[in-house]
Image (cartoon, rainbow, N blue to C red; front, side, top):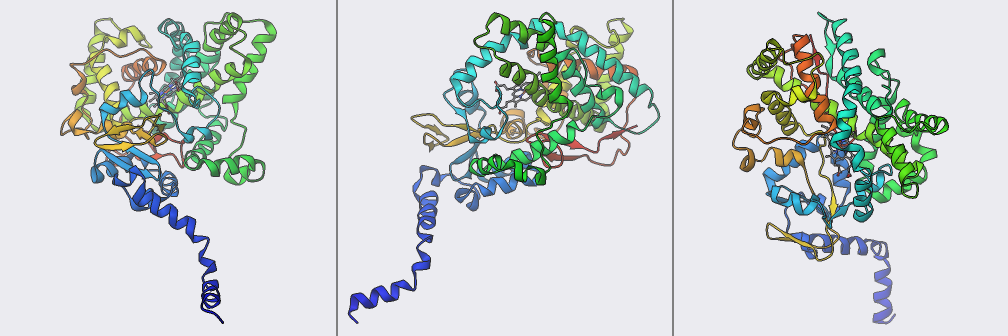
Amino acid sequence: MTIIEYSRESLKEYYYLVPLIPLLAWVIYYRFVTPLAKIPGPFSASLSRLWLMRRSVRGDMHQMYIDLHRQYGPVVRTGPTEVSIADPAAIKPIYGIGTKFTKSGWYAGQEVSLFAERDEKVHAHFQKLISGIYSMTSMVDFEPYIDNTIKSFMQQMRDRVGQSVDLGKWLQLLAFDVIGEITFSKPFGFVQEGNDDGSFKSLDNAFAFGVWIAQVPWLFWIIFNLKCLIWSSQGVSDDMGKVFSMATEEMNKRKKLGVVDRPDMLGKALKLQREKPAEVNDGVLNVIAGQNAIAGSDTTAITMRAIIYYLLKKPAYMARLRAEVEKNQTQGLLSNPVTFEQARKMPYLQACISEGLRMHPAVGMTLPRVVPQGGIRIHGYFLPEGTTAGISAWVVHRDEAVFGPDADTFMPERWLKGDTKEMDVSLMEMSKVLPTLLMNFDLELADPKKEWKVNCLYVYAGPFVVPAEFFVD
Ligand code: HEM
């Protein structure tokens, strides 16, 4: 045997190591070569997106991002090509109007909608197209619809005076019915029933599954294409209950009857379709109706829960809010339900809403965006084109440099010097519900010593940070 033959023979013993070469190359590149290698973060996160996926399943992403930045600094590597940024100055370039950053592959795992549209040009066009439907004039048209549902909600609470109620669940029923009212002039009937029709569970399952699988888009692609085989084993179904079927049913019914003049969102969308038939097809209408239910219900319910929970935990602030409501009531300035116009003139109420939104942002993850051509330099680190970068509201809202050393404390007073807010459906709903609730009821926590449980997805809803087990007497 020659020396060469001998070497070949002995190398044969190591052939099984050949598949490890790409793996080794991967580790070397992502640990030492990529410009992101200098950015601190958990070791395994720098090598695989499975780290993010595993953390998504745990249901504590909101706290995870805060902890990561406290440990590693303003820029943290959370994936082989992903970073989380804790700098408020980066919000504008990443998310501001005219940004060149696009939505990341995470959104590929979501339903087609304005929310999920990843082409920034298409997104901006779509946003402009439907902006009138979400405009200030529209908000005024929607208020009577919100009143119907608030009245029915207050009646349900009145029927339960003296009992312990799961206010978290009731606020969710309310928020969904409000969306039904403003979108189709019809509540889903959840408040009336005191329960939903299974839609919450379907949505929760879909979100809980979608949020971690979307962290690994290729896995999502495989599962999506095999979904008929494995969907049911994940508890996910295409049937989202009344919330989605109502959108299609209402649209078809109105088109058949030629009804296009209702001042609700679907009515405004149908009018838009008549004006711009080439741009607004039935798919667009469905998207508007469906995305409202997804984007506007859980988020508003979560925020209302947070505001009420923190106020109940801090009786001094609750007393100050109650005093503001009572003073306005005594002066004959409040109707029942309170109007948005009346609520906007209550500075402490508005400060409580801002503080609730700050302390408990409904979305717990970063909103991941892809760095455009040319890359970007942040805090001395270069993020090349194609890097995924995102900012978590939880991190920015708890930043002591912005909100002071008491950033972790609920304190509405910090907003009193404050600014005026934009008008939107949630703000209108929260502004009306909170004082109306306090005008009509005394609330206290069923167990004042118990802290609430918070899930960033999993049992409850997708990327949302959902307070659970929130009972009041
Ligand atoms: C307190 C309540 C709310 C919170 C905290 C909230 C939060 C958010 C956040 C963080 C996003 C950005 C998502 C991303 O870029 O990944 C978003 C998008 C969106 N939300 Fe809300 N939302 C609320 C209420 C509502 C309501 C009531 C509606 C509808 C009536 C709504 C409709 C939408 C839509 C259509 C988008 C997509 C917009 C776009 O991509 O241009 N949201 N929301």
